[in-house]
Length: 236
Image (cartoon, rainbow, N blue to C red):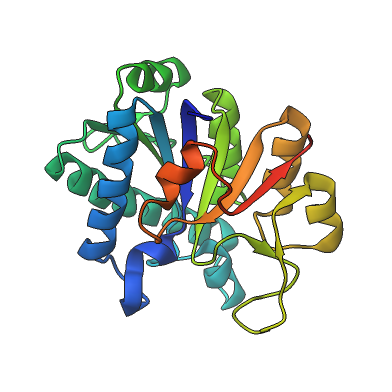
């Protein structure tokens, strides 16, 4: 395997499936089955999920909500998604722990770095919920932060397309796929990979980001094995 410990970044919108909102059980089961293969291979898996299928902090702020309040609502949305994914994984026989940046011990463990690493070493899937616990920070930044804290070998960002393109492939048929790109070029070109704070954090600490299409069956396994899947963002 190329990567022994990964952080998988999922968007909340991805959990909605074709509905566009809410949580799709079919999508949860698809993710769980893909992750189960990794666990059986011996890969240590951590996950960060967004909350956009329920509420986006930035979107709330644009229609007049207080930004801090809206972001807190978004954090709670990620907890809902995390619990749903945990339930799906447990039903598929995967030992899972949800760790939250906001204290809510009745439903999840508080985030403690050493505890998270210990769970991973015991081959439990760790789901990081509630972002960083602070407003004005996205779940992209939370993913970059947690990946560095747990010494993940790579951030694997799941998308609906098979990598990074020079322009939106959903809108432009002549969009060209990029196989490898440096962080500074992502920032300079304004490519919508992750937000600039997350990209800068990964660049400063030299942790690679792999952007790939998770919803193509077997893709995540191929990526972990080092096959040419998606786009790698790196300093190397």
